[in-house]
Length: 199
Image 1 (cartoon, rainbow, N blue to C red):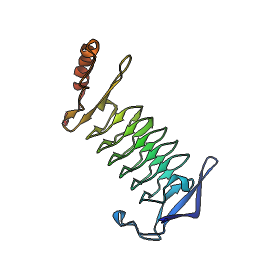
Image 2: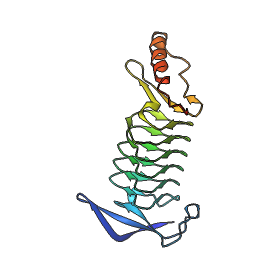
Image 3: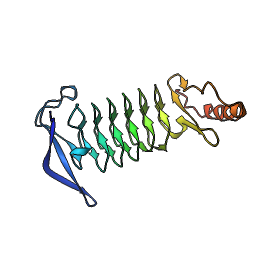
Image 4: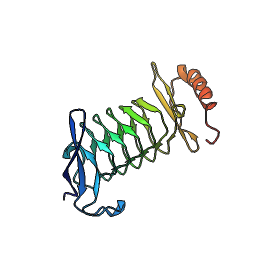
């Protein structure tokens, strides 16, 4: 059953027309009633009608980006490219998600962070701050990313991504190639020295 419609209220970004949405059924978990206005989409393909996904406030979803499941985009957030926001994920404040990024599970992306590339943020991860996160990393669990210093990426023959958590950082792979153990240990040791005082 459809829970929103496109209104006649429009705005343009370049040559792209965006339409404000309006709830046609209550979304009680968001305290939204039938008739309440939401944010902006380029078309119905940007916001799924099944589930309880919502775009609120002045948030924008455009291009081939999609919000589905019970996900919420709010504030002045911008979702573009072919990004997908799904599950119970939330993107809000001035956050931007683009490229082929996926935000899923109970993950939250907020403040002024810019997320792109083919990154996958899931679980209970929280990504915030005022920085650009553009990679193909998998960030999940209880990750707490507040700056570019909260991620360590070692690449070359072997690709490794670590991220900060409330307990310290994500675990190293169990079977790290012997030839890389020393190199990775050196990277991790230097990275740990950059940890914020409150971590």
